[in-house]
Image 1 (tube, one colour):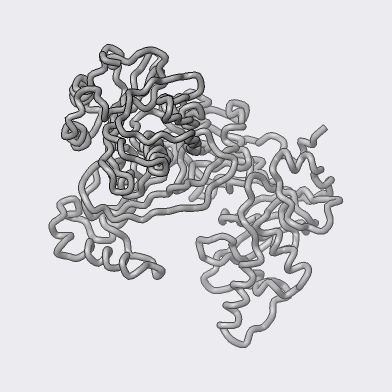
Image 2 (cartoon, rainbow, N blue to C red):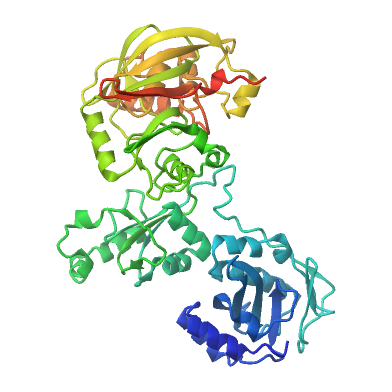
Amino acid sequence: MASLNLASIFSYSYRSLSAPVTLLRTLASTRAYSLNKKTLVLCSLSKRKLSCESLKQDVACTTATSSINGKRKIVVLMVCSSYDDNKAEVYQMFVMVYCIREFNVFEKFQFWDWLLSVVYRALLLKVDYMEQVACHSFFGLVIHIQFEFICSCNLHLMLPNLENSECGDLICFSYPEYTRLLPCPSHNNPPRIEHLVVSEDGPVLDYICKALDLPPLFVADLIDFGAVHYALVCPQPPPTATPEQIRVFEEVTAPSVLKKRTSIKGKTVREAQKTFRITHVNQFLEAGMYLRVHVHPKRFPRCYDIDWKSRIIAVTESFVVLDKPAGTTVGGTTDNIEESCATFATRALGLTAPLRTTHQIDNCTEGCVVLARTKEDCSVFHGKIREKTVKKLYVALAASPIPIGVVNHYMRPINMAPRLVSEEFIKGWHLCQLEVMECKRVPWPDALTEEKYCVQDCGWPSKDHAYECKINLLTGRTHQIRAQLAALGAPLVGDSMYMPAAVAEMVSPGHNPFGKYRKQYTSEDDKAIAVEEWILCHGKEPNVGIGLQACQISWDDGKHTYNAGSPWWRCRMA
């Protein structure tokens, strides 16, 4: 180990600018330029001796400082080296720890906890690199002070002698594996949205890491996913805001403060409060800007189970028609544009330019969607939708029969699920129209089919028969078919949001304040309470699929007509 010289490492790291200058200065101030009794080689993934020559293919270097229970400052220098430039594989990684003496056994336990979290937070490596570092063999450290070595899987690393170190029998520490955004988990984490007002200028990655104590790689993934948004000026806080949040808002939006910010000159406050998506980790932030970070973006694991090439219906010069799988989003969500049909279809076709969303269908709905090749193509298709020359046909699997003909409802103009509909006209509510073209009885999907397509059991009492209906959608409201059929007492199979409410109305008629058996209320307060109770009768959004498919889409009077494959309920398990 004598060939390893910290001065050379520091010099090389400084030249490569792989670590922040301020942190490198912290390292320089320790005067830890050579191995001595206060310096410990803690971890390594290399089976050979480390030397300055092995650092010539430096990938990343960074430092971190901390203290345990007020003890001496700790400085950690982490260097990763690439074994092969072509393969870009991490061959070795080691951690230099300066001054960890004078810890008792419990403090050493705290130290390992802190250090191993620092390794994750501080390493500035690509995802592929990190997979080799983030392994159980690295974090399942068995620390044996008496014999002064660390055993990591089959790697035995000799440690220099430590003066005055307290010897313990055995300290076992298992650090939890870092949950990356990839691979995709099967379940979503609880929502976590952080609202920040930027206090100092600097790169967005550094600021979020510091403000939320998140690993740089994790924050970089969030930015790639489209889960970080900004505005030049902080928007108005919600009614639930704390006095401290209101104070900060008033402070950063004071006219005297805004006048000093050149970035918002020529803009109204309302224009400056418009949010945009952060697109790059090095995007520069200005003090006073607003950040919204979706720390736990909604995930779509179904994207990784699909053979996307087999879902392509047609490819033209202007459009791509896709048979969208249930459980996926067409163009992404506010917090996740990565796991979307547009992204995966673009990759499946090997296109250089991303496909663009022209219209939406619900995540739990499968079937035909049109993706545009260019921005101009997208505008053309939007024009066809406005001119009502685009026709959509759906096939629905309902729990009860539906009468043939046109069905009218009026939808509450609130952009929030569940969507409430009324049989009677209500001023300000939007007309919803659909035409039931045919309705036939079919077998209810068997248990194996429901399990394969993750169809949820929503408490419908009879599952002997279902009813397959062909529907012409005359108006295109969000959740329109789902809400209208549930209001008719024929909710879609697997619709965990609307079926529970339909069951509640079937068991106790009059529960729906806008339904056929609605009650008369003596005051607006009583009706408002009834509406809130009716909303509570609804369930959560389905995880994957429901009995609904956009089976056909056409435009230009049928000149362009495309059909989806068989819906999931016809693909019965053997």
